[in-house]
Length: 163
Image (cartoon, rainbow, N blue to C red; front, side, top):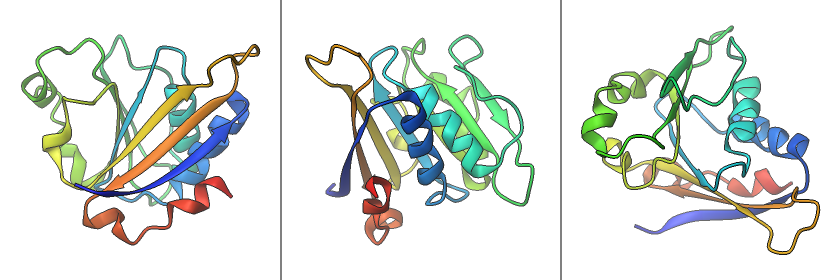
């Protein structure tokens, strides 16, 4: 399934968080965001910015040990469901135990390490892949590839993320 793709270079955790805030402006209830990247790449930092941009309650922290966390909206926007599939080996069966499909229609669902595990939830999803720059001595530079899949993203200008 072809998608709409944009690439953004980020040089600091603050910029990663700002990217999350910009991305939040494009999101609405029912959106699934899959975050992939190695440990320490900035997935949770990006999600923290998403939470700020969506105006949700609670500090966005890594959900590794609780698997999923719900951050209710402080306004009239959708809640943020932040899940971590890293320790889930069984794919959608284990993910179904989290009832993400129940919360998907009214929430923005962000799943870290979701590749190969949550694609069946919806054809319309946003893939965000964070790569560390090779040879970066400061360890801060990241190349972020954002791909929108499905009808939902066909007409969204992801280019605003790199503005």
